[in-house]
Length: 628
Image (cartoon, rainbow, N blue to C red; front, side, top):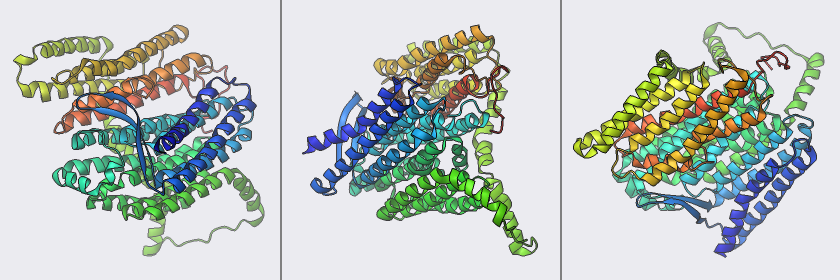
């Protein structure tokens, strides 16, 4: 029976992947076959989900089930397993995802009729089903991170679906920027988990309260750090304080994807992460209180903001974030069943509200001409009046949440990057060659150097210089090839930094650099082709070259994914291997790599968006209004 259940569960994971793969080969002009393939995939998935849940209920009697599908890599101190896990939480999210996906897929077939991106939309939607599947079935953080990464790219593709317009592309970049923070948090948690358990810990093993409590008693600081990183990832994904401002920007996506992605499924994955890891952080009162506090603050702030929104979709988005804040509180208090019931109701309600939003807007516009009643004047004097006006202004300004994130995180990085703008291409490459030669000499003469120099100072130094390169690439606006090569060199420097460790393995470094070098070569060749055809790529603003060069745009996008360590090359596994070399006391080294990891993704995706997306730079193409 174990083998049968494992087989059924694997088929559930592979089914959306098969549908996505087949959709890639469908002709873009054939709308009906594309739609029916997607509907058939979602329908079969729903039937299989009901059968799997029924099988689990009647034959497994609500017991959890964990098994490992395959081991991607194993060494003496590291093991990367693709592991699946099924329990009550998985069953709820499985039914929720299968049912809503089927309904929204049916809705999409007519909603996007004759849209030029019809096939592209269904490709992105099926890819989202793949990533959602991997996340909810994940049996460990490594497997969950695999789906988590794909979710971020799906978000960028869906929000920026109307790629000829300015605002959808701009907002897609903003959302990807915030999601990159969640990716970093999860990666940091995986690194700390490796040092806490010294093995690949599974979610079923976390149910052993005595084992978890014993570890946290000995390593309380590491436990708090892991929990904070998990909370960071969950707060970002579920649009909680202070990251709430991204969710209305996501409404630039087509209505069906807004409903399925941000109204119901993806926005609740932060709750899923907290539920899945609750047996770990429930032993830490500080984290429990922090989860409840973040949920409470989000509920109050998001509710106030929703009252003043002029767009019905943004009203729904903020209302959903407020309800998710309440679900955070329920999870913090250990109310599992109530949280699952609450999130299920919220997901169904928000999906329905967003899908009917266009009809509601039409109705309200018509009604206001016949039954419009102006609001009564509210006095602005007195304590209550002043408080109301202050809250109103704060709500209109969205409590300055967007500005807060920029001031605290992005503006300091941009400031440092601009200070490096004076470094010319020739001086940068001269420095790279010189310092690289010094690094290689130090590695060859490692036995003659003090241990503290080779195991702590030099790796951190080279990683820091690599971070400066990424910052220089992040602020570059004139030469795209120079910015691209700085990212490639950064990865080479990361490999150079970890080579100082005696346990560094050539095979593991080859796994890391294999996809990097291939992606770097292909991407540089693509940019060179664009330079030959269009001249110097000055990407201060959006160029929109995807219209004339869709093939080059796709190749360059895939190259960007490879350089940002997306799971299409072995480098995705390599980044985990690189982090395992960093000792737990070398927090500065880990923070540098984490920041670089965020900025690399932002620099690459922005480069792709600026060159290939947005309104076309040539005036012989139709240019939509900037505010569309």
